[in-house]
Length: 172
Image 1 (cartoon, one colour):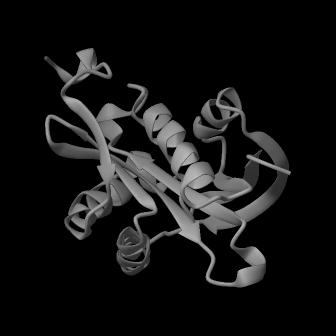
Image 2 (cartoon, rainbow, N blue to C red):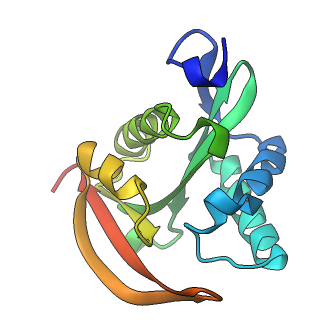
């Protein structure tokens, strides 16, 4: 089966993220197709982001999609340590550029929604999306609603990107 033919089959699995997944996370974040959708801009920032991101795996609040046993995407709840904020979480998601638009992101979002609502008892989740990222359309299809867009939020060498925050409420 080729990458073009990937479907949610027996070769595709979702599991808790492991510290060893950091290698794949860094690789995806460094790719030109991916880094454009994040607020990091250089190697040091990507390294720091990857370390922080993968550190959440110890709380079992991060999921990794695998295809034929190899990681192909990660979605993570950035849980808040403060009592007044533990009812909500920001989420980051990345999919291997070679497997984007193959329903990997959809599977990760649905599984993370379930984990957030049923295990962590979150009331709401937020995605922070930069620029005209296709993730916005996917999140809206999966029940997320746009809260706001800030123009000229991220500045890089080529100009500015907007920031859009989308939210899903699990219980009022």
